[in-house]
Length: 241
Image (cartoon, rainbow, N blue to C red; front, side, top):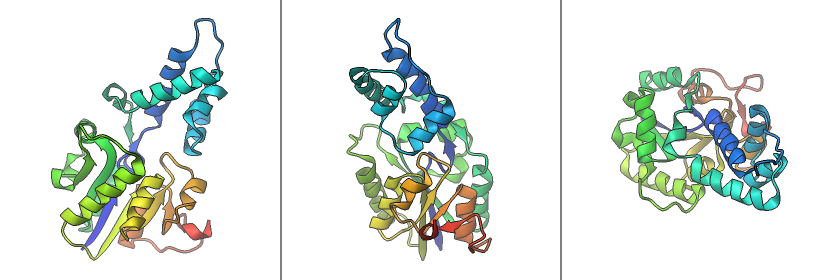
C-alpha cells in the first residue's frame, strides 16, 4: 500500500487572501491617525511572504517605524489563525480532482497540518471535504496544545502518524514549508515540495526534497506514476532546479 500525507494549507487551501487581509488589518491598527503608510498590493505582499521576509520588515516597508513594526508582527501572529479570518481561505483549483484521483488509485490518504483540530474541522466542514479525511486520517495540533515551533511540532506529528497508521510500502509527504520537508526527511519519508503555497522555490530547495512541483495535482501524478518524469516535464527533481 502506498500512502500520501499532505499538508492542508498550501496543497489544499489557498491562504493568500487570509494572510493579505490580516496584513491590511494589522497595518491599519498600527498606524497613527495622521500617519501615511503604503498598503502593499496583494502580489507584492505575497512575494515577500513566500520569500520569508520577516513580518516586522514588511511592516517597515509599509511605512511603520521600528517599534510599530514589532507590534505589527506580534498582532499578525495573534490574528492570522483566528477563526473569523479563516473564512477567507479558498480551495486550490486543482485540489478536489487531485484528492479524488488519490482515492481512485487506492492510495491511502492522510492530512497533517499546523492548524489546531477545531480549525481543521471548520475548514473540512465549510468546504465539504470531510469525505477525504476521516478523523483517523487527520493529524493536527490539539486545541489546547502549546506550540513550540512548526518544525518541531510537525516532526512530532509525523512521528505520531507513522506509529498509528497501518504499515505502507511507500510514504510520501507533500507540503509547502520547511516544516513539512524536515518532518518527512527526519522520518525517512519521501518529500515533495509544493510551490503553490507560502514558500518560493529558492527556499524549498534548501531542504532538498525529492521533487518540487507546482500543485497537489502534480504531486499526485508523481506518486501514482500517472505521467513520466523527465527534464521537459513541468515536474522537476529539486536537484536540477
